[in-house]
Structures are given as structure tokens and as C-alpha cells.
Length: 558
Image (tube, rainbow, N blue to C red):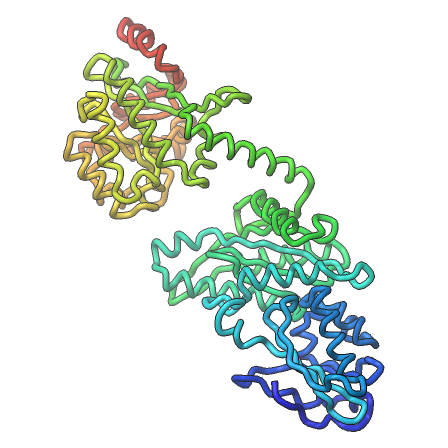
């Protein structure tokens, strides 16, 4: 920073007149504050208060030490170093001018100048090096993760007597990935920028808004006197971010999930506070227009349990601690056995047999589904090869198995190793899988269908574009989701959907299977609608592979 203009000869500058700020490279706007030889504060410009993150009360501090210690943007060492430099400027024979960048004040640079006899100026400006590179998110102009973490650490590293409450609000916008897939990344980026503007407009000057990664944002709320202040901000952000966006003519709605952690009650250091805000965000249900949660100690217990389960799941994948159970599938109206659906179970060493809902979502999050899916394919084909022909085995496929066009090779290997004919294998995919993997998945499924492998659409009717998927791919089977079957034969919407799906199957020459069949009344209704096949507890529960021969014998004798 270069020199400053004369701010007058008085120790305290005239009210309402800001001393001219020091010039900065690139002409960046700058804040100033004045002080006298006794380090008493004179004028604090509005821009200086913003850059230092000072509350209104802190801006009225009489002493320079008190004011600097109240800044959440300066850690303890930065505050002490800056105060020492200002003291040196007032000391006869001391360093009258100084330009400073401090590691404990990320994103800021400082200049100390003598304005007149007895009056000194501390100039504050954004660091142009950080603005041009690190510290600022290039997409939204908000602070980036490194800047946020540094500012949070500085806010918490205050002397106890000067420390004000602070809150971290972590916000994830669910739905942006779908926007990228359907409308394109350019629209998605515009949406992120629009969300950033709403966040920035909703907070005070002393608060900091950052984009941490992808669709995740964070707010550092300063001067939190009581938890209600953070709660009010969280509720306001859920409301603002959940309102529709108009982007390039498209009306878009995303769902905000916000987790709140408040210092010092929920954590006294930056990593712990961020981790606990993440715990709270994870437990905020993504329903309706969005929601928020504040951290509670119970969340920490569940988080630790989840971490233990993650570690155990990684071991399970490495040691193949899984087993497959098989549920019968029968043809209607005769009820003769046509095959089994393979359903994975995890034999946990302490918790016993776990169903897929207990661990597959976690496996997807940890990137383990491709290895698990390959194991399921191999094991299901090996088991089915020992069954009497022409019994089939149905295997569910996850999005991860389509990565790098790897599914055909995995299926080919499973069939070759087991000796199972391709026509006795059926792969089940959901609409969600197809939407997540796009044309690449359809190309792989077409290649497998050409080899004789059957392809079924699972949970048909629960998505938003099932008919579109039927136009894009010639499925061999549609599986009616159990949520529609369970309401039969009461009628209403469930009956109308079952009737529509079975009629669609007949028109397109696609077999239709109903899942979750538990009563004879449901079977009679499905027969009236012309359903081809069924599975459910009425015909048999999932059983271990060792029990399959007994099930085959029992259904053959029925």
C-alpha cells in the first residue's frame, strides 16, 4: 500500500469525514481506521468494519487492542502482531510505516501510515493475491473452503473476555446434480450463482458466506448471543433457498438441508464445529421445501456408530462377508416356479444378518457398490448354474456397475466362470439408475440383451419418466412396485396403475411381474388385470442358497 492523505491534525478525526484510504494494487476498495499515540481509536470506516467482521458494538471500542481482539477475521497472533506494529508507529524512532500480510488474517493486507502529528491510519484491504487465486471461489465469488476454515479458526481463537458466540451453518442444495444432468452444467452453474446471491443477501456484513464444494455452502455467523439467533438464520435460509429460481427461462426448485453448530456449546475448535454441523446437516430430512437441524449430543453417538459401520463394511467387502438369499418368482395363473431373485445380506460379526437397506446406501456413498455388485453377479450365476434348467436368476444392478462401460465384461466373466447360459440371467435396473447413467447404460444393456441376457425395469411406475425409458429401450419385463400391489384389491389409484402397466405390457409384448404379493385376494385382482407373474411372501420368503432345493421341490409339488 502506498501513502495516505492527511486526515487532519486532531487526534480524533472530525465525525463524518473518513480519512482517504491508502491506494492498493488494482484499485481495490479499502477500509481505514484511525488511532492516536495512546492507541485510542478514532474513526472506523464502514468498509473497515466489514473487512474485519466487526459487530456494531465492537466498532465502538475505545482502544485499538480491544477492537482488534474483537475481530473474527484475526487470530490471536495476527491481532498481537498488528497491535505491535501500530505501537511501533507511534513510538519515537520506531517504524512509522509498515505493510503487512499476516497468516492469521487470511485474505487481508494492512498498511500503517502517519496521517499527521499524533494521528495514525491503519488501512485494510482485500489481498489481491488471494482475490485473484486462492481464497475466493471462482464460480460464485464467495469465500472458498480454505478461507472459510481460516476465518472460522480466527473467530474461535479469541481471548475469552473478547470472544463472541459464533455459529457454523452448513447448507447442501439437493437437486442441483439432477439439474446438471437434465438441463446442462451451464444452467447448474447459474443456479449456484443465484443461490450464492441469496445467501449473501440474507446475512449481515460481519458474517462470512463460502462455497465449500459442489452444491455445499457454509455461513460463519458472528456475534451469536443466543442459539435463537442461529436458529432464525437457518430458518430464513431454508425459506429463501427453497423458493423457485428462474434460470434461462426454466423454473427450478432445489431442496436446502442445513446443519447448525454453535460455539462454544457445540465445539470450541474449528474442525470439531464443522464436523458437528455436518452431523446435523446429515440428519436434516430432505423433504418438502427443505429443513434444518442443530447439532445434539445424540447425533455424535449415531455418527460414531456410523463410522464404525463404515469401517466394518470396508472389511466386509475385502473379506466377502456377504451372502445371497433367493426369493421365488412364479408364473400366473398356474403358479409354477420360473426362477429366483438374488437378494444380498451382510453377515455382520456383531449385529448379525443385515438387510440391504442397512448398508447399501452407505456402500454407494463410500464407492463400494461396483465391487459388491460384481460379487453378487458372480455368486448368483454360480448358484443358479446348479438349479434345474430353465430356472432363471434375477440380479439388481447399481449405477456404479455401469462406470467405464464395465458391466458387459463383468456379466461375461460371471457367465463364463459359472457356465450359466445367458438366457437364464435377468438383470433388473430402476429408472433412477438409468437417469443417473444415461445413454452409456442403455448401450451396455443393449449389448447384453444381444447376448441373450434378459433386462427388466424394476419398481416401474414410481419414477417420473418410466414411459420415456420404455421408448428408449426394449425391456423384457416390467416389475410393478410393491407399493401399488399392497393396496389391492381396494381399488383407487393403485388398481388404475396396475391396470395401466399390465395393459402397456400386453401392447408392447413385455412380460409384467407384480412384487410384494402377500394375499390370494391380490392374486385374483392381478389375474383379472392379466398380470403374467408374481413374487412375494405368499409364494415364499427369501431363503439362503442352501434352502433353494427344498423350495424348488415344494413349489414343483404344489
